[in-house]
Amino acid sequence: MLIVILFIAMFSPETAEAGLRKPAGCDFFTRANAEKILGSEVTWTGTDATGATQKWTCTFVSKTAADGRKVHFGLIEFRSEQAARDDFDSIVRSNTELKGFEKWSGIGEDAIVHTDGPNFQLIVVRRGQRSFRIKVNPAGSTSIEDVKFVARDLIRKMIGTRWRKS
Image (cartoon, rainbow, N blue to C red; front, top):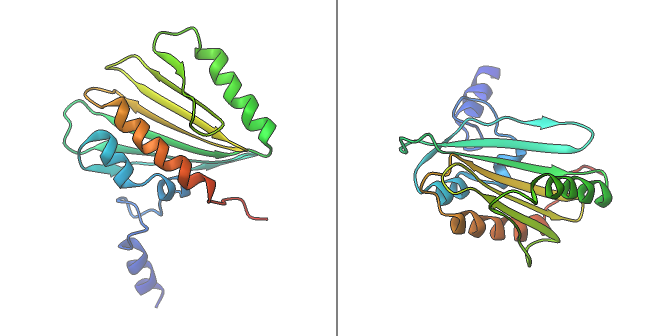
């Protein structure tokens, strides 16, 4: 019986390509999100981590792009809204003087977009005690507008999602 359960779990849609369960971040940021950004089929190579704050990460790699483009996604739930704000402010302070950095208004409570064109694209969005990060590296032909489109969709999803157990 145990072998049957393991066999079913290995081929479940909730299971990653390597036979491992996908991290929660990859349930939030889906394969379809990554494919929209990269414009091609992707494979999941993810990781997952938790700590004092709840953090989930995953990485999707383009199956067809010869340039090795990847989408890295991080979903974080901080212990407090102030901790989330402090983390976001730290990112702003570290990047504000760099070329291609801009605040993105109208998305979440705080959001930034940072890109240097062909090498990387980064979007960080904070709302309340939660934030997410989408990084495309190398960016190649990826459109920053496609990354923004996915981020807008995720902020709507974030509003109604609860991760931390009471």
